Length: 296
Figure 1 (cartoon, one colour):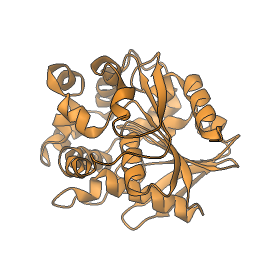
Figure 2 (cartoon, one colour; figure 1 turned 180 degrees about the vertical axis):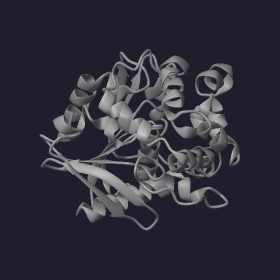
Figure 3 (cartoon, one colour; figure 1 turned 135 degrees about the vertical axis):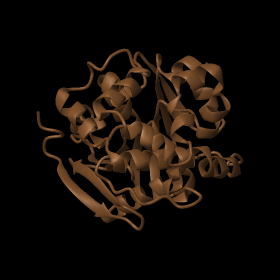
Figure 4 (tube, helix red, strand yellow; figure 1 turned 90 degrees about the vertical axis):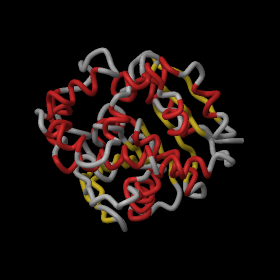
């Protein structure tokens, strides 16, 4: 199985990291960002189809996949969603784009939200998949959320407690435990893609992803609190899985997002957390309809 046939695999240096990505297709630029503990190949079912209409860029976040993982700053600022968003802004600039579409899942969606806040002039439209804003997620954690989303408080613990524990077991074993708490099975992942996830789950990405979660518990909450008075003006698409943590814990994600953005559309899809791999046809149709629609 070829991963994203016709796409070019490359690295781009940003001011803070080296970002690994695949890009291909013709048309308006569309950036795709993955979630934890995955890589950009999580878009393997979607990117080739979208490349018939867009120049698709699927990138690894800093600290994930084959992107670099800089050492953490004392305040975790270089693993904040602001830092991750800046990487991707610079990636798109290096590819020749000052304005573009963006869709993100999980951590990629949180990066997308911050990108829209920090760089609204560069984002034409944005889609976030299976998240509510970070502050809302922490505030609603509770008993159910802490049990289903145990990795949030666990990976946010000071170094190197989570790193040592995650690194002490086989990558395949940990990834299965992690993913199966948020989806019914792993049948939606071809073996070649699973092997990529396992290959990329190593000391570097464990350290980088823990930096991400420590930032989400600290500096990201500070940044988001400071921006509570702001609402996004650009069109925002919100998709989530009916059987995911978001679907189980939040009655109306659209209502939550309408407190953060003026123009919100979307719906729940019949799947778990890994929406773009579990329900690719529905995601493709939504993204095509949303990004290709011309606003009157």
